[in-house]
Image 1 (cartoon, rainbow, N blue to C red):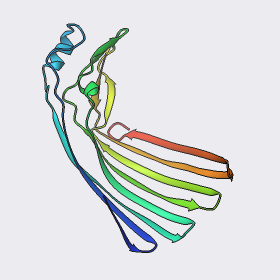
Image 2: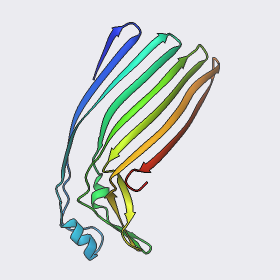
Image 3: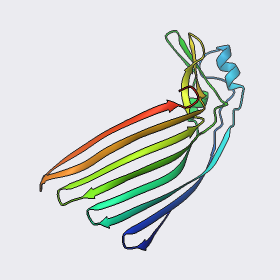
Image 4: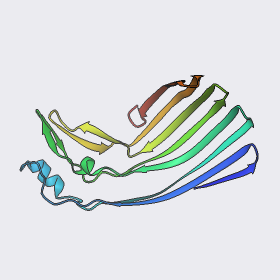
Length: 187
């Protein structure tokens, strides 16, 4: 992680990270002798996932009370052990494992502004995230579901948060946000 101030009103940040994750499970499911569970546990019992991710951001402070911010980052999330190998029955619905899940990957963009006044600190941020291999639970048939990579998705939204100081002992914190997600393959 590195910060650079090329001018008094500018800060540029950059970060990078490498992740390597190995998951290993036994060949026998913990949930009974369901053939679908047993067959799923026989596959890909030792998946390895890795990724190089990074971010670049900038803060511009034209005045002490107003800052503009922008950031672009990549992200990676490997499926949790329960997402790949979790198999269970709830009522009439069986969840079967999917050891073939791939990690989610995304590119995230955000831009916003910060207002800094003596009694008010306010942040307004708009964002967009483009996902590949998004993980989602999908109904395979009427009684069976499974976590699957659903392809590509887009999330867009905005957030407003802040702190209003009412006096030495009182502060009002607030937050409002909206987000919309779309599977870009199916709409």
